[in-house]
Amino acid sequence: MPCYKFAPGVYPNTFIFPTDNGWLYSVSFINNLSLFKGNPILENNKLSFEIVFNRSELDKGGKGKDELVASTISTILCKQFDLLGELPIYFFLCDMADKRGFARSQLFNQWYESCNLPDWELVNYELLDPTDETITYYAGLFIHAQHPHYKLVPDAFEKFLEQDVSTGKFVRRR
Amino acid sequence: MKKKATTRKVVVRNSGFLAAVKDSFSGRASAIRHKKIVDEAKSSGILDVLIGANKKNASGNSL
Image (tube, rainbow over all chains, first blue to last red; front, side):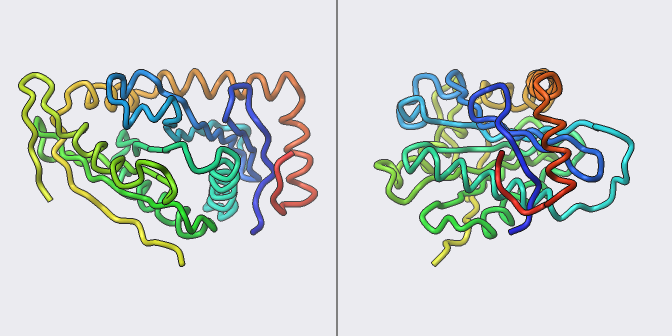
């Protein structure tokens, strides 16, 4: 599939690409060791990665829709998943700062469907904030079907989110 | 055959995670990381190589 050329960034598991429309994108797979501390299933032997995108303006080009961005990100995801094999788990949180979190979660679904990753499962999470019922956060988790904890990880992530740390209670809503 | 994504609804009561989410959305850490990646790509010359390569041919391989 056509896409922009990309290159590794200065950090491990980080990639960068410029676009014809004057944007510079970085795609990072961040090994966030502190987030799941104390939860061995989600720590996943230090193979839990958060997928993070950023972009900045490179020059004042036209800023219209650019199909190559999606195909480039999709290509990077496929290559990274292939490179690190079936043992890592990847998760993402969709930025809500501009209230476009749902649209971003849909993009992840499009990338997932456009990637040739038949053995990877994407589990989406709609996260409801009990302190503000008007807000929904969107997150997702990629796990390989041959992962030794394939069945456990999505449930473990859900329980991790539901856990009321102060009281130890769990609340479930489907 | 490719699997379809599934969706779960969760009430997040993990205050530590919620705080991390909100901190993540403030964007400071990721903006700093992004700036360092960009600065390094500029200083190493790889950015110019990418821009030149993309203008010649947008047909997808990493450098």
